[in-house]
Every structure is written in C-alpha cells, then in structure tokens.
Length: 325
Image (cartoon, rainbow, N blue to C red; front, side):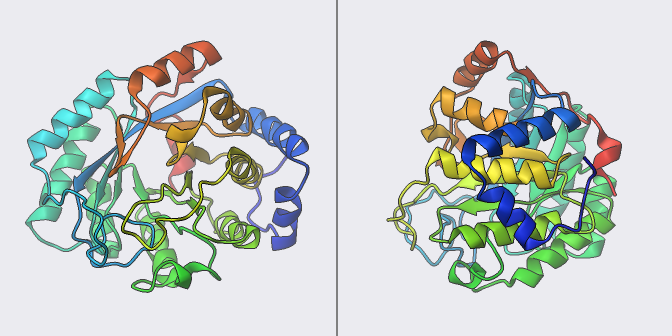
C-alpha cells in the first residue's frame, strides 16, 4: 500500500461505512504494514494556563462565555511545569503536551516562559507538543528553535458543521495555522472530536481534509466528547466505542504512518474496548489523571493494561525524520 494524499471523499466514505469487522481487519493490516502494532506511545497532557479563553467552542469548559466552574489559573511557573514533565517521564511518558487556553500566541513574557519550558523538557529527552491557539510564522520558528517537536491544532469537526460549534475562529484560520507549523518544520498533531451532534458525513469530511493535506499530520487525535455541565453541549449523549473504532480505523487506513491517538473519552472505555481500538490502529494514549480539565485514566491502570495486552511504550523521537517536513 502506498501513502496517498489524493483520497476522494467517496473513497473515505466507502472505508468508513464498511462492515465494522471488515474495517477493523483492514485497518489492522495497514497498521502492521507501517507500524509496530505492539508499540503504543504514552503521552501526558498538562494545562499550563487554564480558563479565561475568549473563544466560544461549544464543547469547552475554558471559554469565558460559559459558566462551568473551571478553576481558572494564569500561566504556571516554569519550574512547576518542568517538575510535572519529569514526573510524567518517570511514569513512562515519552511525549509531554502543554495546553494554554489562548485564542492566539502573543509576543510577551508568557510566550518567553513557554519557550523556556519547551527547551527544558526537550533537554529531558521527551518529545514536546504545545497547543496554544493561532500563531505567526515567526512564533512558529521560535518554537522550533526552542526544540518544539509537535504542535497540536485540531480541526474539531468537518468544515460544513464547524460553524455550529465555533464562531470565533474560521476553519480556514485552523488550516492556515497548520500550514505555518509545517513550514517551520514542526510536526503537526491535528484531529477532532466526535459526539458534537455532527453526522457521519461531517466526520468523513474532517478525515478527508486531514488525509488530503499535502503532508499528513504526524499525529491524529480521535476524541470522544466529554460533555461538560455549563457548555452548550452538556446534554450530548456519549458516543459508542464502535463510532470511535470507525474513526480510528478510517484514519489509520487513509493516513498509515500517522500516530492515531486514542484521546478524550478513554476513561469511559473498558480494557477490551480499548484493545479493539489498538487493533484498529490506535497507537498512542494520554496518561495521567486529567486531560486539561477533564478526568482521565490513572497511570497504574494503564500499566496493568500494557502488561495484559503485551504492549510496549514507544520511545521518544522514533522515526523523527518521517514526521518533519
């Protein structure tokens, strides 16, 4: 099988709608062709600046537009973040992801501190990923020079449904940010959330956009909505594991070398359900007790799962030359 960037929407739809067991089987074969199927990267995500975001993302607890009871805090001190990164490394994580509830990066002392954090964590031998909102080409270059390995900027959903979820930033804004990150030579982490009230066609649309980028994202997180009280989506029903598997498997088949990250919503999954996700091509998880502001699976549970399923943690910077444009 060849790596393709010329998928048609119909081809992706045909994959997505195929019988679920056939889909898992096909995705498992692609996964084994391009990756070590026993290898799963363990990542840790830390909110380094929480709440107070001016955007109106309908799923997010950190927007100033909703009353969610989130504990708002300014940017954490550099030393505290480095301590958290060391703790994550000690618990087996090889990628440390930092999220700041900003609409966009600003050239100020906070950004200077983020650059310090990136340098310090890179020097620990961990991959560093940031999600800081929109940024300029100059800011992307500064992050690259500081040692940033990856930048997360999710599309969230398909272009056609996007305005139902977010009105403070356009879909094109998101694509331009991804382009700036790739031009700086930083690998891209971009995926989305299912369970926002979108249709299957909206999910296919998002995968089509990602799979037809000139360079596939190095990392594709697949999130299930964690409905948060106080947000417009607080009453959304939880998506089924089969919906997650369809997304993971279709992402794996269309973007064979990408790290497909089993992200938010994993806490609600049993170990057998997670095992099916790994079989379908997921090869990364987030460890630790929180994903930004929502609960996550405990580290010891994951260690027990790895042992039972005979999975091994992926080392940092593996195949780095494949990730950087």
